[in-house]
Image (cartoon, rainbow, N blue to C red; front, side, top):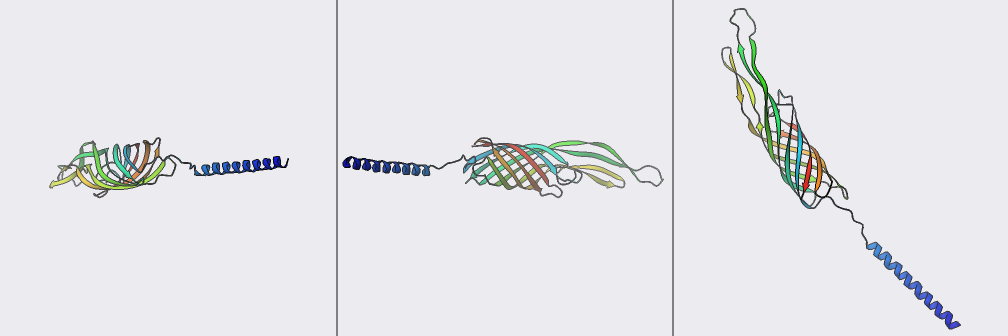
Length: 234
């Protein structure tokens, strides 16, 4: 009887030790399991962004010296390469349809000796629609929010803008004779700074929205640009 009791106690002790060891092993394995979340923005990726844009000038169209209008609509694209998730270098191009008011005047002096101011006769008025565009190199800082589809960003760039700068000028010939002289478009330097955000629908497609301010190397020619577009990631 004593032997039977002793065997039972030994078996009970061995069972408890085995159970404790099993629980310890299970707890250790559970501790080694790390929960991960998807990352929507890669360390090394190409971004091709296609967007539409609305442009508005810093001054009234009568005083703006490059676009010559209050606002314009257009579109563009930019190609960027991001390295280490946060930094991107790229190129950007865009074109907008700017409508400029045109005129053609002549100064007519009345053939009378009665003192009075000369009359100004407007012979032709109209609108001149033309494309103005730019090419820029850019540098972007991106800040992806961990485990989310959202990433704000800021950028800066510089390049050349072309297709604007046309103007009609009243030129004094001699006496009371005047005529309108047309000056064609010119290329100018442009600098750009902006900020926006991207939302990723999938790992390879996103939606971007941003705003930039553009500085043109001609007086009274700066403008703002609001953009929205689709980003393709490779």
